[in-house]
Structure formats: C-alpha cells, structure tokens
Amino acid sequence: MSKPVKIAISGGAGQIAYSLLFRLASGELFGPNQLIELQVLEVPNALLALEGVKMEIEDCAFPLLSSIKICSDPYQAFEDIDYALLIGAKSRGPGMERRDLLQENSKIFVNQGQALNAVAKSSAKIFVVGNPCNTNCLIALNNAPSLKRENFYAMTRLDQNRATFFLSQKSQVSTKDVSCVTIWGNHSATQVPDFVNAKISQKPVETIISDRQWLEKDFIESVQKRGAAIIQARGKSSAASAASALLDAMRDRILPTPTGQWFSTALLSDGNPYGIEEGLIFSFPCRVKKNGQLSIVSGLKWDAFLEEKIKLTEQELKEEREMVSSILKI
Ligand code: NAX
Image (cartoon, protein in one colour):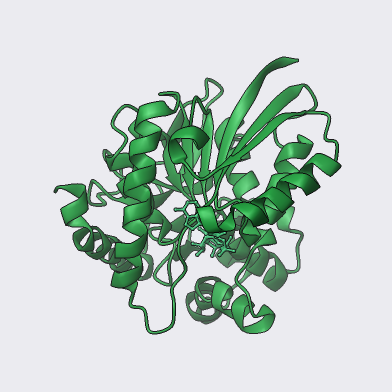
C-alpha cells in the first residue's frame, strides 16, 4: 500500500458530496492499492448533519479509507492535502442577482484560497465546483500564490458529459463512440458545447448528424439548459451526475489522455493558443501527457457561428471578473 492520498472536500453535508464521498472512499478513483484520507469541511451549522454522513461512511467499513476528519475550519481541512474539491457555496436565493451571488461566494473563496496557501501541499490540485465556479476558482487561485497556478480547475465535465449524451442520443450510438467534446468558456448558460470539432465514431459530427439547425439550436440549448430542466423536474439541482462528473474530471487529470482524445476543463487562460483574454478561468480542450503534464489542445478550428458564441462566453467571464475586481486587486 502506498502513502494515503489526502483529499479535502468542502460542502460535505450537501447533496453533491453525499453522492461523492462514498464513491471516493470506496477507492473507485485511485484503485485497490491506494489508501485515502478524507478531510471534510462544512459551515458550523451543518456539522451535525455532516457527522451523520461520517457515521454512514464509517458503517460502509471501506478497507481503503484510513481516516475521515470533519471540521469547519479550512486551515484544518486543507492541511497537507493533495486534492481539494471545493463544492461548498451559497446557492442563489430568491430575487438574488448573479452579482450578489458572486459577492457572497467570493468571500468564501478568498478565505479558502488563503487557507490553501497556508497549509496545502504546493503541488495540490484544486477542483472548484461551487458556483459561479469559474470565477470562484479565479478568486481561490489569486489568494493562493504558493500553489501552482496551473493546478486550479473549475468543473465543466458535467457539461461535457451532457453534450456527449445528447450527441449519442441523436445519432443513436453509444456514448463511448462520441469523443473530443469540448465545452468552451464559462460553466453558465453562455457555455459553448462544440459540435464542430467533436467526433462520432471517429468522424466529424456533421458527417453523421447533418441537421445543422438541430446542432446550432436544440443541441446547444439542451446542454446549456439541462441544469434548469433537472431542477424543474426533480425540484433540486443536479447532484449524483455532478458527483460523477467530478470523479471523471479528477480521472482526466490523473491519467494520461488516450491518443487522439481530449477532455474539457476550465483553467487559467494565460498563454492559451486561441487568443482568449488572459487572467480568466476559461474552459478549453485539454490533454494530459504520460508525464502528468496538462496542456491545452491547440489547432481546433472555429467557424463563424462558434466564434461568435465563444466571444460571448469570454465577455461574460470578463464581466464576472470585473464584478470581483476589488477582491482580485486588479
Ligand atoms: P447543497 O446546497 O446541497 O450543499 C452545499 C453545501 O455547502 C451545504 O451543506 C453548505 O452548508 C455548504 N457550504 C456553504 N458554504 C460553505 C463554506 N464556506 N465552507 C464549507 N461548506 C460550505 O449544494 P449542492 O447541490 O451540493 O451544490 C454545491 C455547489 O455546486 C453549488 O454552488 C452548485 O451551484 C454547484 N454545482 C456546480 C456544478 C458544475 O458543473 N460546476 C453542477 C452542479 C451544481 O449545480
């Protein structure tokens, strides 16, 4: 057995964490020879509920789980961690503007960024899920200068999975035959699911789905609005699918990417090959080499339709950054 991998999870009493923690503790991500230590963070009011989750995890008697610690202090939760999964955030209340949500959540991510800076391993990888996840990730990164900037990610893997499903359903193939699905930009309603560069059975999507109108309208809107459709149907936001996507996102980052494929993650745009403004957390097609290095896949072509949409999502991210500029000191 190798040394335990230490993972911090914030929002531990929430619904995404309830789907995630058991799968993480079971060892499904890191395999049967890797011990796991969980350090779970919650707000003080939710610690009792989190204690209940902890008891349930203990009752699973997972052989690979060497410890689980719960707390409400990020300086304890992030101590010496290899990964932080930042799920906890306030949700948008009635009548709350996007700007208000950004302001509220920005305080959380300033505080957690500073805690990561002080106590996490400098090599720690940080996955931000709590919304608005791109800008929250930017705030955390900005407050954690001792960590590597390239190790901060905001999750667009759920959007990628949704796009993959819609393409497979339309073309009546298995999801395993859909590849190279990129989500560009923000995890929001302006995100751009890219059908121009995606492939079905190794061929360009449009050679299989010739209905361009469906691709431009129904496909893109279905992905953009899937979260809202789930809330409408279930009365609650996506949880198990978000947890599953987060495991996918971690796996994408840990393992080498199969030849000819890529995945989507939002990361710092500095030095990107597409001319996107620097200093944003923007979702790009990415690949991980055998040596563990992640890079943005270059050379994908945008047609005029895609380019127009990508400029809109870039603009939205610039506006979000502007709204929190006092915190970012830019
Ligand atoms: P829940 O409301 O069920 O759980 C959130 C938990 O976070 C609560 O238990 C709350 O007490 C805790 N929390 C709040 N502030 C905290 C802090 N400062 N430190 C630690 N814990 C804190 O929400 P859930 O459904 O689990 O969703 C969590 C976040 O994921 C939301 O912001 C949501 O919008 C976002 N999502 C992001 C997705 C993505 O693809 N990036 C998809 C799913 C989800 O919508």
